[in-house]
Image (cartoon, rainbow, N blue to C red; front, side):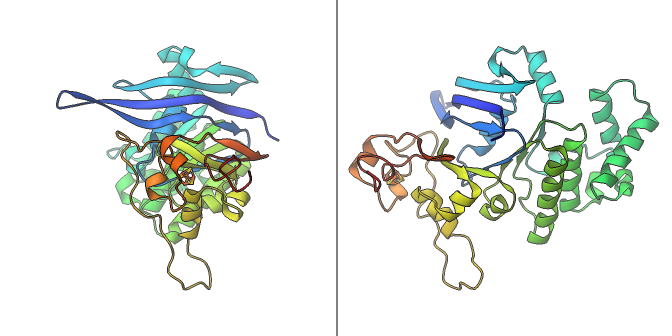
Length: 334
Ligand code: SF4
């Protein structure tokens, strides 16, 4: 098994809002324990509004006031040593983000400066990370890198708006990989792209991971994309990881009713029956249901589900589930 590169313990990230004088707490990430490894693609899936992006930002040490990292720990394993992110100075956090992690935000336009050509964006990026390189050297480095990833070097003479959405997204991902980061954190990199273009973006991520043997943490609600690229998948619901396993087990033997709905909603070759979607809507993160937050939508809900929150328990190696149906006195396997 690969070594741990990033670990969280009881991570909570809440937004404290002032709504007409009343304080409201948005529990976007609520007690998340992750153990992400070197040389793997870890996928995080779930419906919109379940806290995926906040979790990614917390992992990238990019949560700033007025957001509050209320509780819990994030450890990065750098040269084999665990570094507690909370103990780092703002400057050390900035260096961690620059040297160790690359963050690909949602929407490629937000990562690229719209009023300068891509080669200038590359120059800015390289000169802010690597000292002592001349302008010509940074352009040569950018051209070489773009060509190695199978993208046409002439795109460096373009402005972002002159490229298609798919090409812009690939340029953004290529930029993130330029300095060989140990971890690439990608937030919905295939959103709003058609399936053919999505395939190019997914392939680029896979090529980069194969080449660098680094870690990619990929958030997408698209279970088809997760199936293609992820080694392990964590299913997130209402700020919590409710199931985590290898991609094979998540798709082949999902245990949590929410995961089962997500898998069953996927189109299957040759099956023309109507796909089943998750009933109801995700809960407000300001006003979560009692007990298991999925209980108002769950066809198997029992009394205990409304009263007590199930822990994420280990079923077998690499398979964890938080559901009263599984592995306990109320469960099938009891
Ligand atoms: Fe459904 Fe209960 Fe399991 Fe929640 S704990 S998913 S409500 S069976």
